[in-house]
Image (tube, rainbow, N blue to C red):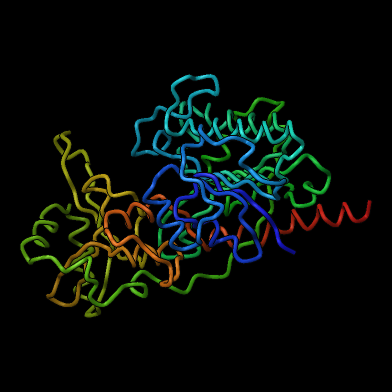
Length: 386
């Protein structure tokens, strides 16, 4: 059975990769020409429209699809952003994250034409749970409910699938038909429901809470890959830094992180960790730049390369030898679950941006296989029975 979908804010088509060959994309869009180039390099692009969603007419959305996927912009919702939130549908000048309302308008128009998707999936950073005091979360649930959908959400962390800490919120909306309830759990499942999601849900007004479903989703198989397993030997786009540059990084570390270095040295093994530069408050109450390292086999969350602190650094420790370099573009792609056949931009900064803005493909596959496809199969069986 071939399933159909639209992919809004498509980036490099990582939702497409995760959904897999059993799905057919009828429309995809992004306004970023560099991401559009990557999408077309990997997927062709007859169905791809490089244009602001505000300029896309509903007549450009062909047919009636099974799924509408939208990973709308996170800049105004993320912890690293400006906290402006999504704003409202009526706002004449929208925030970047307010592009959600453009997507919502397209879904409303499709519903008016009796072409509403059977399922909608929204993906964003965890900040959507708390931005503007939780009002943005309530606005998303209300907006989907107004379109006739029952809604639930998970927080899925890529760390269960690849060695990258990357929690993301996924809203799953299904048309208000009886089959949807068959895939709901009687209570939230702890693995996918952190306290922030429970708190956000508790703020829903009664009419929205009544339309909420706690979706069922099985636990994935145990991940058997660590950061060190994904590294290139000598990547051309991420050379080892000088000893002086590495020492400067060590000088930025607090005692607790220097102790991690000493423990790694004492192990006698080749140990590779991920390092971020962060701004912290020092013992005198002043802002100070710090370098923080982790040797737990995980990378930190990949981000777009907007500044020095967003660029993740690798630190290799083997006895007295300590070396450092940037994570390479291909290593970043591997952390997103992209195969080495995936064509990355030649420019390293653009490759980092593509991955930092992207979706972890194995997360999408798990979601599709264990919830989206069963939901669609359930509706098809119900229709056949009728």
